[in-house]
Length: 303
Length: 259
Image (cartoon, rainbow over all chains, first blue to last red; front, side):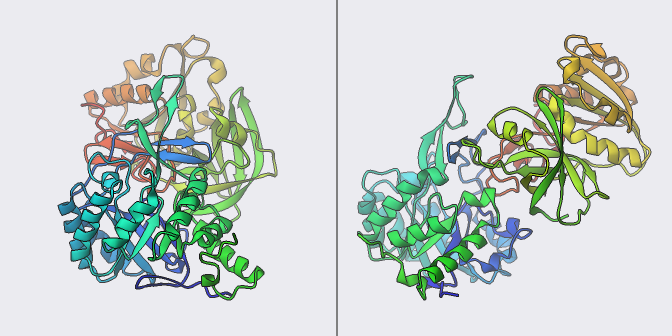
């Protein structure tokens, strides 16, 4: 058994596999399938200060090797999370992070302040990359100035580990990554979904009620790898890589590109046990290649 | 029964007509109770263009042989691939998912209204209801007589009535044109329905005007099937609800169809 532990700022992870926000509910939805405590961590559903109904439906379109979604941050709000969900998460012996979003900087701050009071929450993932909301979300993540504003503002009120989740829907992700690092991010996670669209030729209508949505799944992995590799060369903070990870080999590729941990997202829908299989597969890869520890391969791409 | 993911062995693949198949699947683990209305999310292997699982109502359960059956209508690549599954092959299934129809505590006069592949969720219900000595009428609508399948199977649990759009079986027209629906609706204490949405809405409208208990089983495209992706929502008086976990069965009073 190789040493799979890894570090994201102050977070000690027993293994590098986390779950991506929006694909793992609050963890409790998976209790029938697996022991959530075996994971390196979970990032729970995107949370906003006020409850959100999310977008109109249809919200999902299957695509070649992936899917589009336009859920739009449906959640019951930070107060409900703190009072009704959080007590159920204390049982997990792993890092529980909350994905925090908002329509305005004040909303991000208010949400982060509530999460800051919850002892068992190890950190937040600041979502400045949701492509499915009209205000806030991705609009904060596509310019250096707005990233600096929101990240610096939340940094002032949130003391524990703050990961900033980046959008791929930009021209130069390295520049935005540097802006987030400069403004106080302890780590960066990437990538969120790519903006896409599906059309039904028979009805001549868009498939999604919102017309466009976020593309995830193996279709986006090459783009995600490229962006992790670019950002790894641009910043010093540890990276959490994601985008189309379906198996251990995919995860290894992200470590080689420079990620210190990975998040598994869409794959959870198809196989709710996939995260445990990926952890096992990473261990067997390290053993097969005679590495004692995961850190031996992080960023070690042979050029 | 808690949700599981298991490799299910195809022990029978019955072709019912041109585009409907009934797959009987052997479950490795001992089956616990599966409630009528619950569904299974099946993995489609080695089919280009198919990425997500496909949800199917659990059509019937045999606790002695430890099998579940699913009724598959060929619609796209995924359902076509599953319909071709050879005997002795394996299909990865996630089940049982979703809520279930409400079963009355005492025997009642009940009407089941099914249309097209909507009959899939009604078979297990009819079987369950028949065990409590309910007086069951089953009204099934289809386009033509060729599309009407499994009538003998339904007849074990109640009195079967049919409609076809071209009049080749039963009364001509839609289920809502059938005399039992049009003229004798008032005698039923409960209505359960599954089928095309316009049909269920017409059934619900009649149930509202007569204040009869009515539950419908909804269909939706799903990414996960267990309440985490929030893609398969439907509008209710309590806001968006997931068809996969808050449903697929909804009391019509919760839906916003009448508004």
